[in-house]
Image (cartoon, rainbow, N blue to C red):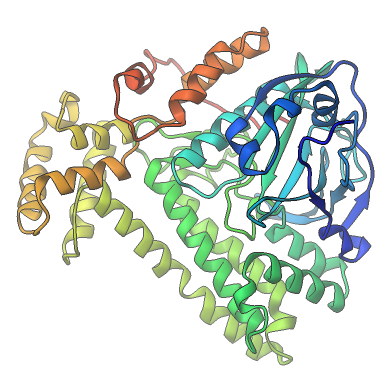
Length: 484
């Protein structure tokens, strides 16, 4: 078997054995590679041509174990829609950590590779649609500059899987800074020993924030660092209208990356109550709820660290509460800075937040498209009559232009700022569905074209025009599903 450049280490597998189960993927009938992320492969130190070989395709499908890999299913817990459960990798295996030419450590995980001890009566498999959805959306998020897990490859298995209907099976190869979650710490706190919890915390700090690993207050600083990363991440979601869909604590990565693209989608018409997930009947994870849910999840993380923060529980709680109190202000600071950029505002004025919120209120009332509104403002091409033709908008625009006129930045500099902050294209839900429906029929052309356009979201070129259009008169709300 030719090695395409795999350079595995398996440091997570050196944690206490309670954190994982060693096991191999379940082989499939006839694997076939349908998409390979060549730029990502190159950054990982892998030879793209070699990854297309029969041996490598077999590895992507779980039929072969790459040289140096030690596959494990990770154990974790999590609050799912507010209810605590024992979970774990029910259909995924961590092959190991690729050490890149730059010395970075990157998880390589197979998703859809068969049942594990954590499958909870599931078959451990995945359908091609959800795996390609994750490929499309995660790569779009990367291009938007949002921290995210990424997709290296998708291989079909040659075996159908049974959901409501029979669907083609597939395996996704996912990369991540790590797959350590808030739920991993919840698992350690609930079922592990004090030594297990400390080992996990020390390992995670050394991996993701080594600069604080030897601080006297390292566990408190660790909590602060995770809070800081989540505040920045969720602000970035809000600024592009991304709705994760299932912000359970097992879907919050300690690294600060977006993880697990199940029922996610991008908002069309601006409405904070927007929900796409078919199972979120109460709107717990609606667009407007994502920032406070982030704070709720972080509070659950802080609870796991209490034994490490201070020997006295009351004092530990005070330290945790003090750190958590900064989350809302950190999030607001990132969001406000991002919204200023979206409107070309340089510097800070006291009334900026009111100006921003007034625009969003108008957009909500008229059902204006979130992405296209800011694209139109960037291009000074105001063609949404319901929004731009209204008296409310005319009054707002006058205040906005007065604000722009008070800053020293030129008009060209403001527009450049807006072009860098406002994507011209996002993964429109109807375009994603179009690509997935074609893929289910064995036609991957629509997906390839969509991925190519989404790789350049700030290009503002003619090739993007058709991908900016809204879907023609949908008769029912768009719904997404977990894809289990």
